[in-house]
Length: 343
Image 1 (cartoon, rainbow, N blue to C red):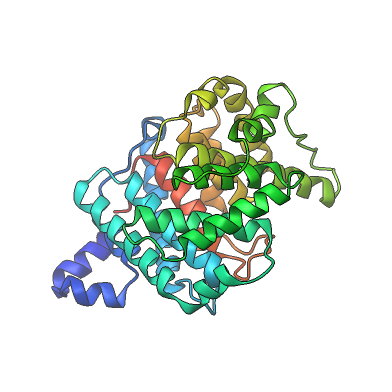
Image 2 (cartoon, rainbow, N blue to C red; image 1 turned 90 degrees about the vertical axis):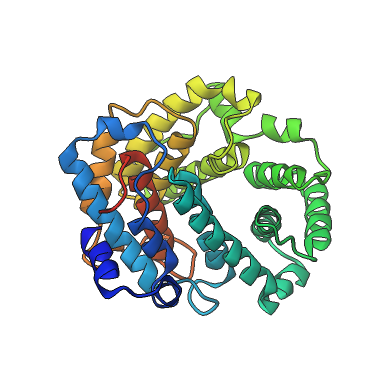
């Protein structure tokens, strides 16, 4: 992002001050030369230039709209931490990787110190989704070197709810169980049984979720989208957000899974769901799926969908902020598949 780096150089503003004025993710991507990907080799120079511009534009939006308790709430604050972690993972430059990791650690420390986080943990009856977010938060805080004192409560309540809800959403049960195991805790249910009930296993057995035609009614399209979001979460949990290679169980199912991912990416593109399209592209990236034939068109769709303000517009979601998540996912998807950082 030439103008940004030139401005930083010409004004000679000290980095500490800069970090107080601009969102660190924007600054650091000015300094990051590339990401880990083989996909960039399949993208021509003209598209890479467009992608660099789009990524910089998306990061400008993120810098101007940071998550807060008033704008997005605790889930968006947690997602923002995940975003910093992902940017660190995708950075090939050691210095940039550590700077992103530092922002991730700061976000996890800040989140853990919020009274509202403790209230979330200690609240009475919660949805299974809340337990997913809390176990994920505990795991990320531990990875960030700042484990929360509330981890035993989070773990115990998640174990209790898994034991008490054997017929609830299989993806949420699996991902909570995996995160508990990664925290060194007994999930209280059989992980093997949870894997057998997963969306991935159904795909491997030749029973993928239906991807309805464009003429389908909204409820059918919504049901398909929810299945695909669930699939994304299974891949995330099994690969540690792309930071670990697929475990043997997943490796043995990659052929049918990758084949379905190609169909799902095309379907999400036709449906115009930028957030889902981006998450599927990132999931395919984690699995090194063969996207060569469809990747240019998918990336071009993301480029065409970006708004003048750097966002991708509002999308259908239960989140309080209807823009932020899609900006993070689309920006990350473009960057991770292009092999190029903003100029």
